[in-house]
Image (cartoon, rainbow, N blue to C red):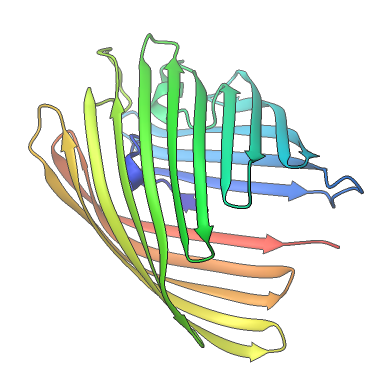
Length: 285
């Protein structure tokens, strides 16, 4: 289960939302393609009360090396009563450069409060990723989210990831983000700033404890800081402090969980939130 972060990388998704994703993928066939099914559930507590929505999705990852086409279809649940369709094409031009294009009808990123107002959204995105080597990755993404209340959200995000130090059991890495959004002036209960910008960075320090053959226990801490600007409001600092653990029991089974405390800002008001994350990965032969 993962709680959404209202400011991560410039996102305008509201706080107080929880997200759980369960995905089962089939083994790849001789062509490298595979099927998958996904169940997504969203939960949030707001002034309107507790809100719930979700998606049940089936998809196919079609290997067209050096491209991969992912197709998905499904239906919303609870507050979300619309069908879902998605298509994503990733093309690796080289070992270093990749471009991704995607489109979603009834997007998985639609805020709960929008769904509660019977507002749905379609999303279109384009991303470029440059992986210089195993130590450094840069990327940018542009997305358009078309809400059916007349709002068109334009998002742009850039990020940089750098492995600063890795030796023996130690890893030190850094990530930086800069993101901005622009929204139309519509009456909306979901978080919808006219314009906003977020600049942030995070340091990650991990230490791995060997437990046996191909088994490890890893502990890590994260420290992040940033600045958030919203039109019509004073700029505010953001920060986060987290701790996580990861168990790799087998090459096919891993468990990770963590807790973080963070400061985010919405309409000029600071929110101090406790964030819980968790992920279980189990690969079947």
